[in-house]
Length: 167
Image (cartoon, rainbow, N blue to C red; front, side):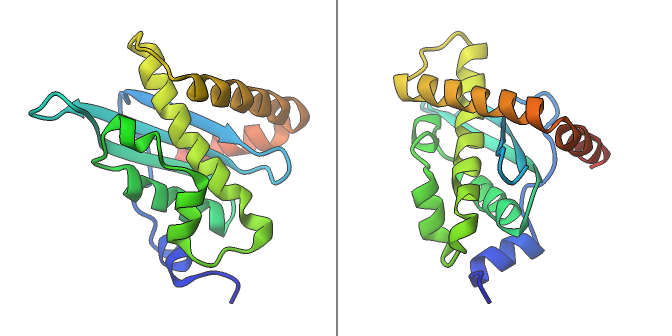
């Protein structure tokens, strides 16, 4: 089997699937090659010390086994973390936790990490907060990727939007 037990567990029983009503941040990413699209929704609350933490996180993914599993894993890794700590979750940390992933599917880890980063970017920008330089650069790259995906594959975006609305 090309997938680890961890990947199969999260694919068969994904955690935190769905939308958050009135999210504090939304991250939407897509891949032009495979057509996968992910959305991550976050809710932020301050703890007793005033540290902003991800109190709730959910995802919707239109994609393959790996994309769904890594989206689920991402939400489990980020939930309860301080926003500054959640920003440090990378595709490498996801892959390390995931175990065996086919090489051709490793891009899914980049999508998942990007979706989280985009949700944090959205939260910070909506609240007129300082956005780290690396997050700004990622946001620009992600937006270009989405524009290309929507331009070159409008049929995927249309199908994906219909499916995500039904959930």
